[in-house]
Image (cartoon, rainbow, N blue to C red):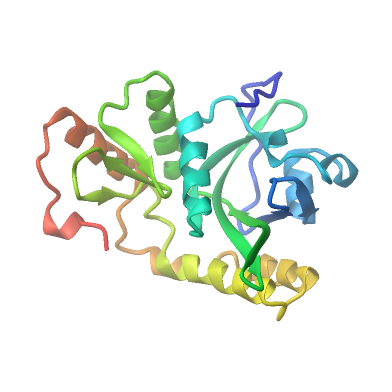
Length: 234
């Protein structure tokens, strides 16, 4: 796995409502980056074009997360998860990323990624989970299509429950319009900028990532045998 150094312990905070977008070819080489993404990562557009997308990968990200992402994409499915990225100067920033394969005429032509600003509790939960994975302390928890599940157990625990169904649909509809040529990239970028928080009101009542990860830890240690009906995802 590519290791990008040096790194600092300085976090670069994104503005609420920002939507970072990029597209790549089938080999994950960057073919487009919107202005928000360019500003966040600290590289110039010229430095980004044609480069592998892992140019911004932070060494704190566990390889298991990206292995899960690629396994999901290769099945033709979208992947949504928390990602810690590295800026050009070594600082870091967190995003809630959605990556989707793009097809034209039934043939895979590349990937599109839209990243939004996560809640702080999502960041806290993800930091704890990814640290546990890196240090081999995650027990029976593993990644599955952007979710965190317990091996051999049917109940799925989503670390990213704060991403509401409406938000997923918002991103998916935009990507679909882009993929079929209904909406050009420039229009899609403008649409994203105005709609990143369009469905924020739909978050009420969802399980928080921090509580979700704690539930996962209990399941892994055997302290909790099942989720109550009120806390089951879906």
